Image 1: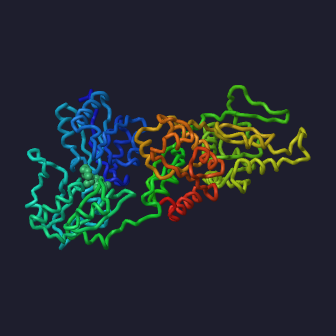
Image 2: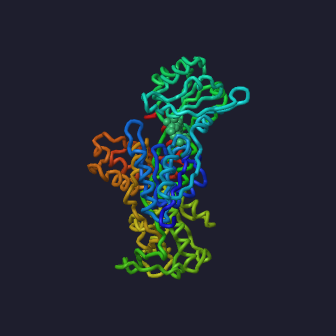
Length: 541
Ligand code: SAH
């Protein structure tokens, strides 16, 4: 129906974001509304259209957040509110495996709402696979049975399972939602004749960085859950195949397994470090604090001439013809590099304009970015700071000609963002600065992201502005008194540890009450190394 939205029942897979289907991702990227469950990972929520309305209907095992009947109605309501819109109903695992997807679909049919089902990888099979347990195996199990351990009979409130039949199955038994009732389930199966020595495994938070496998037998199931504090979400798998897990457990315990880290870099820059931390086993929550936007044409921020400095009253556009009068181009960020070259080309010029000029960079990352444009840097300060760069460039200005009216005083052009501090400019009495990109602080955190951040182990900061904005965002809705850790009355489990690049960043973080760990060098490599060192040393692990 043309005046209704289209609903997609999408399986998000068991947890590892890489296990979402390509089709599922395609729909999430263009969804207008995303209605999601508790078990969906933040990384998958992060893939959703940034403009989508995000609706959390997650259920906690103890208190139902939104009733199933309300969810059903909600989907119909969104289909009406968003004519021709895309409504993604995102569910853990597969939507039709104990996901109540069928009930939602029936309601949609009733209301005349069109829908697609995008299957997901069910936890029933994939979670054992991540623990090295094949659900079927030649000579051991010729069938597998997926059972809910939760479904109560309406008449007497007891588990409505046919234990007689289940106990006779020689195949693998896989229980979902069964932890709370497992003691009872195991006893009933034994009463009905299942071998008490049947090997069994509980796999908790499978496919996520927190995955844990606990082995038991049918007769020790109940006590093992208590002793090992097995908690949901977990799967119970029973049968001979479980023993293969001893040999086939392939998932390595990585240096950052079980750590949740918040990366506060701008989206464009975050992916490099996020990928590396993820590969080391961490769960990464990308939470950019700033968004950058390349200006169409650079703004001239300040022109200092030999006659003294002039700062334009209003922003004036830069003229690329002026490059002819420049001897040194200085870059202080990869954004600056990218923006400048974009603008250079857009203005009808190209890199031939830079022939014969000297190029300076604040540090290694910017230097590497310039290399991508085919440019070696002439000047990089050893300490990789704006101050270091300022001193290095200032030293190029010959003392004897200071104040003279004719060159060889090198004419320096700084290519920076609108929020660049004045350190560099102040150290260079004879420089021009073009603002090539704008940095806009992110002013709002979606609820799902705030929740994910609150549960993180640590935050990664690469700039003072990231620290300041993070604190501001996280203080919203709380008492809001910095230091923000105190503002939460010590109750909210907000991360206390921060990994910082640069001394300024570190002191900003300390000011707000973070414990800080600073990288040896101002590079991401160095920071990643430091994070691994920190956790392998067992501190607060
Ligand atoms: N539709 C889902 C199942 C929903 S029922 C699917 O196809 O996977 C929820 C149950 O699934 C949980 O109680 C737990 O038994 C299981 N489960 C889901 N994700 C899991 C995970 N990552 N690790 C272990 N069990 C999981």
